[in-house]
Length: 336
Image (cartoon, helix red, strand yellow):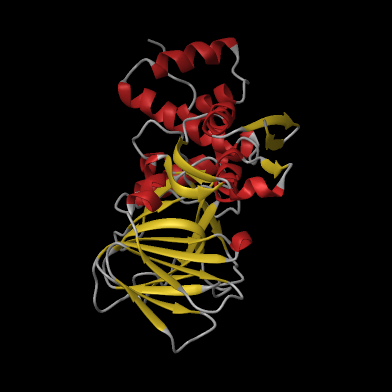
């Protein structure tokens, strides 16, 4: 067999961008079929391309991917492929192995409004309709829900402190370390633990903070009250709303609030208003109610991230006397 004249990364990049010559196509197919490792490498690159194709040119993709591969060979123990670019790299190995469309995007920036401007900040973002799973440097396992971002100081995390910032929703399985408490900071409240499993929901547009404890214990401090500390026990949920005095603590079934990790959303006596907020994040589409009173309709059921928009709307239609129509990127709900 003729020796390959091109590095596989060059062939992959040209294939994904549709720029292979007839000779290069033969060379690419020969390389692809040579081993299962080659096929696996191609599939990983393809998934990375699909996430980043709207943000990187073919030349950028090939150049940055080469940088990443070189870095990964030197840092095999981290299993994190890094790009010093404000755009994307994709860590395929971290995708959840379940039949749902999941993606993980890693962003690296030199500056952040929340963290020290002279340190590198790692950001993990789950795009609309996706759930991301990652491991932090201390071994803590994190699921990041659709439309959410967590960030931490790459230089300081697990060295001097374990502190992350969250915008949106995430589930944490924290590695125990009593000497370095794990802190989650959000605009409305902060959480401190040493080792436990819990869910935090703090989408900035909703102006609401929610914490659900699955195992262990957590200490919560509201940002408007440095003295008031709230401790939760497993099976409890704490809810705090901006500009509303007091905090609600209730016994709950944790699965109803953490099932999104598996690509499912469970609703138990939820309002239609609550339901459409979740669907807007999943499908990246705006919902409108012709009659505002529809928002108080109570709903119980399950939605899967695998469902397309029409399947989700038909489920609402079957459950209630509610119909819909779609106009551009807007869904209108009305009484049937």
